[in-house]
Image 1 (cartoon, rainbow, N blue to C red):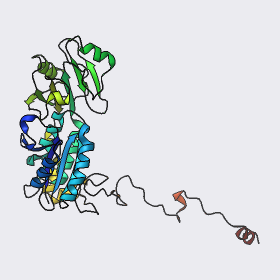
Image 2 (cartoon, rainbow, N blue to C red):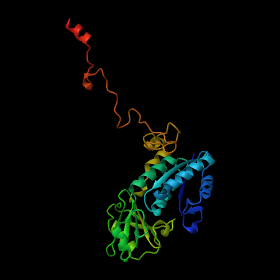
Image 3 (cartoon, rainbow, N blue to C red):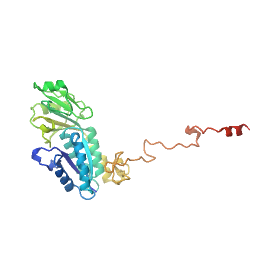
Image 4 (cartoon, rainbow, N blue to C red):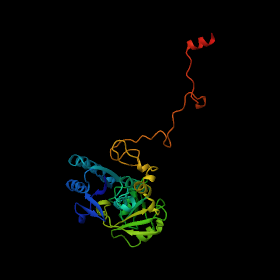
Length: 321
């Protein structure tokens, strides 16, 4: 059984309603028929489909996937909403879709290794966007003062995504509040016509060792309410380690025996490392000897620290006699 990767979201007009973007299949959430057609083309009998999307479209995509499951019951879809910009979604999808990072013994993408790579990148990447104005930005939500400041121009704002999403005003030609970016990482840039100082300032602020220019699959006017912006994503410097354990486990049975990614779900039989199966939603129960589980104490051993049962009145009277 294989696993394909698909991005669903609001595509740029020149991408149409479905197709590929930088080698990754894409479909437009505003066209449910195109979404179903894309899923039908990608997933064969018994295959699974890893669907990546932004948080703002997750509810609608979940509804569409539920309808697709009725029309295509042989396809199992796994929805993975991503916090961050469209560029962050594309970066993770591209790396998860890369066979060199998640190949099994036969050279095909290994679903367990793909999930491992996805979760590793989700924890480690840093995503932000430089904007000249936040007057039409909804996520992260700017303050009233930042809205007012947008009316008068200036060096712009940095909208940082993630658990602590925030909007920070820029001062001069430097980018603020980049301390959460992984040091020595790789900077991915989707520049849609911002001032020339922004990208060099980003390189310096995050301490990136290299830069990759990568077009975004979403129109900035639709995503951020501006015609010019710079989407910024910092990938970890040790990028080759992302998903490496899963890949080795997929290719080497000896490694698979010791890898969490190699455990099979008792419900559907698919391998994954998560506590809840992404395919059938069964909760994994750790084996008795797994780390973090506590064996049942021996009640016959006084050293176990378990109080003896209280004697009844009849037992006490018998003992006194």
